[in-house]
Length: 299
Image (cartoon, rainbow, N blue to C red; front, side, top):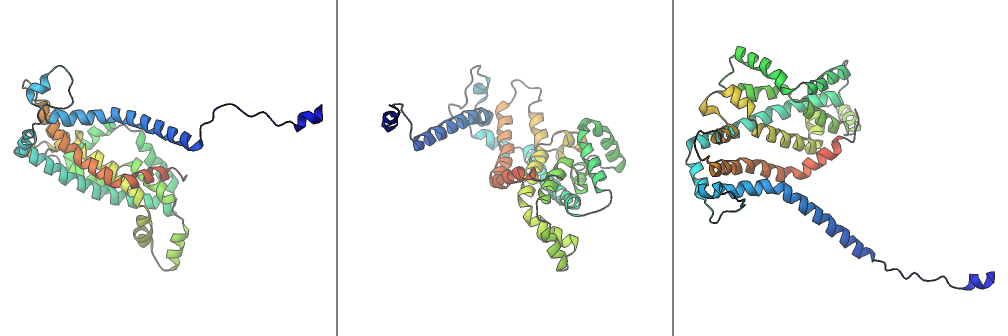
């Protein structure tokens, strides 16, 4: 009987199996469906902002929620470009942000290079002290900074916003850039030193070109932070001709008028957000690569 049982073929499975290619298509469809659903939640404020910027004041006051206007009011944007205060605030933001970027990126690149590629006594202690500054809330340093800038005579000028960046402000950005630089093979430094290169040449000719993804990440983060900066211009500038775009929009929404000009404020917000979106879209590949690579090396 055992011999006969072994000779009999195994019973075939009658269950239905989905082909592998069909399973792959189903998984891809479900993934994109989830991502599309989540993206709708994130895109809703942007769509609402753009739609509100094209509405009339009557449509803005309607109790029911409508994303798009019946007839787009492009003159809302035309009014902004005829407003000298808006033009001046926009130009001020366009001036301040590149200044902050130039000073901060160059200075923290030097500091990150010193922490990641150079050997010097007390490096670990200094790095720990620098990282300890991350535990200080911004509000704790606001008053001492104000007193310092007041004594320097920097109030009512751009100096309190632009010049500190040239002294490597931002421990988190230094840490991000340091971690990336530590992933660059040290054999490149040794080969350059054999050829007679000094540390400054190694920094400029080897480390900086290879750190483009991390530098793009730092640039995007700094651009967003500087472009959206509201507190510092409000505290230090103190002159209408020096105020930036975030201050302009905040003042639009604090006018003692009824009804509030939401359509004008949203039109200004659309023009305010556009440069940041363009920069992110142009650098997103390097931005994602820099964030992904940063945590791959331990200091």
